[in-house]
Length: 368
Image (tube, rainbow, N blue to C red; front, side, top):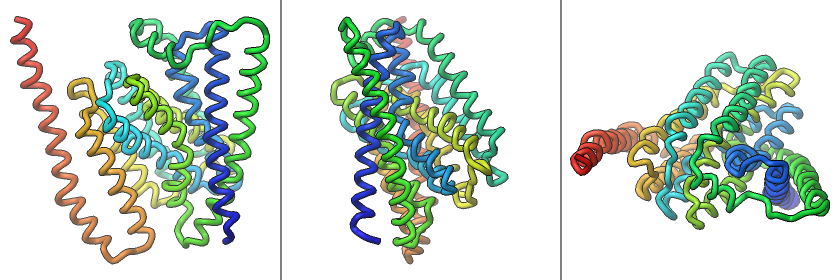
């Protein structure tokens, strides 16, 4: 392997991030100009647009027969989105969780994560199953457009401030924004081709599986737009955008990216036994863990963000130790199973108990 492989990898990542940024900006401005509300733009165009790198990479990987990279990219991105991005954003400032998220979107994310596991039990997500998943994202998007009309003005104004088009007249804004969309899509295609090719070569050089490369390097790279969007939103105080972008992207990754990958693959999307035994169950467990965290107080507190970040470090460490068959892996696994996981479960249980029996009782006494 030459230095050019790493240059190609970094260049592919840069093209993906820049392409996603141009695609989101151009599409957002065009959507606003044709009368789509800022809230719908935020929930659909922006959340889905930041997942465009995952789409480009997974589809490209499937077409060249690298199903492990395609699947690892989606599963790894969903894990990174929650553990790393939400964790980091919550460490910057406690994040507001809209009621719709834990009443609708998080249950949907949990449900489709479990559905993915069930569809993949036979070792493949075939074309028919891909159509089922892709139909789901269309249904979800239509529902969001209908549901957005019921949202409060404060949320809509927040999205409008970030994503609405300026009141520019004439034909020039249309040409500029169409150009941004076209250039963005071109960069995504070229960047995904660079990234997939270099990732395969690096995996062979390191002697690790393509699934591990997909779960780590590729997933981290394609998640950069979500990192930029959510962290910037948290810094600017747009805290519900930071959360909504992540959950929307996770839903899009499963329904649209995995769905389309299953459709375009000559034999569908092949799912390895390693992913079925560990990585997909981890993705499901993290999705389920969102529910009690999101529910308590309607916020993601800094300490919960720290827990998320810690688990991302632990997950990545496990992948590395397992891939290299390190001698400390048995001790690491024992500590996780018998100490870290029970302590985390106990902490979440106490948080739920506090929310139900202490905070709400105090609130009722104050209003009485």
